Image (cartoon, rainbow, N blue to C red; front, side):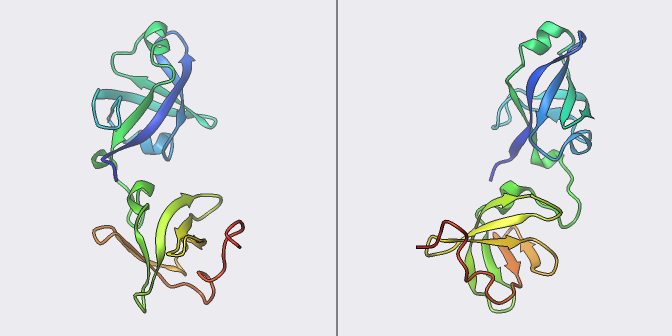
Amino acid sequence: MSDFLPAFKVVTTHGVRGEMKAQPLCDGAAFLARIKRVYTSAQGAGETPLLGVRAQGNMLLVRLGGVDTMDAARARVGHTYYFAKQDARLPKGRYFIDDLLGCAVVDADTDIVYGTVTEIDHPAAHDIYTVRREDGSTALFPAVPEFLDRVDLEARKVYVRPIPGMFDQPVNGDEE
């Protein structure tokens, strides 16, 4: 787990006053609008004021402190900026993907451990957790309220109530 997560990557300049077009690496403009500072490294170095962010299609338009010319913006093309998790406020029941990776997936009723969360995808309305089982195979788990009981980040556990067979069938490519 990291204290700093990717916010966006600058892809080009936008206009002549230092605004930059960026690829979002988090939940997008509305999420970043509540963040007041970003960092130039994943370790928290290079604190920079985030003066403004807005959506433009599937991209972001970003204004950073100290970047007020096209040349200054051009010098940042290709750079990734990070935000501090402590600066973000998540709604109840929402978690950073980084915090869920590596958590044990445990049956809420029987305490059986099904495996470990190794990946989280968001193909539609709900996240899909990839769970690596002890035998090395994987299972896909839909993180919907019917199956996801609770998350205990301190204990590094995701408690689930799966339907029969959910963790028994291998995912394509795992079959031998």
